[in-house]
Image (tube, rainbow, N blue to C red; front, side, top):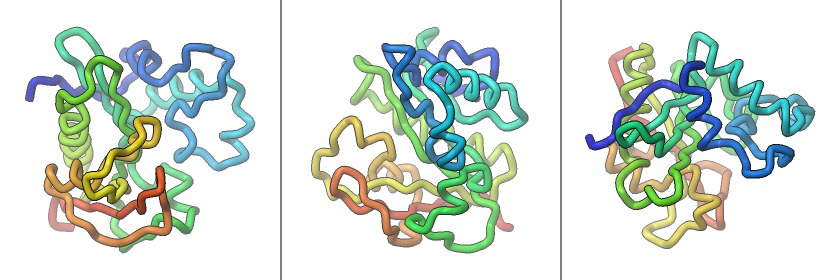
Length: 195
């Protein structure tokens, strides 16, 4: 693998910010919090409070994601955590719960401009699988678009594609009620150990 993968710990917060922060610090960008927080809490955070919330998460027991590096340069981000930590997936109705396993979830990919098309997202997904496995997860899920090879708008491609997940060994476990960029999203899962 040409990219090194590391957890998004507090020591790497500046690299997280490089990937998630908007150009305008007063812009209320997601900061990969939309799926994690209850809607009222998420909407109440100001643009200046959002990075501090992510900094707090990076200091926690379970980092909020992983980072990909090409040498010393950070080139990608992937949100990965226990599904139970993500409000949208524990309380929402569009992404089904397949069973009661304490699965982990991959919900966001971000690749820096100039580094796309080089396999960064694939490396991030592989790193997410290893991070979840090392943390004792019995399985890992993602909810990518089933675009069947059609082009996906770069802004909406953050959820990944079905083929990205299939190339990493995931299989379709369920349909979802969610759509992104006009494409249906599917629940893809990979078993990590016997539970």
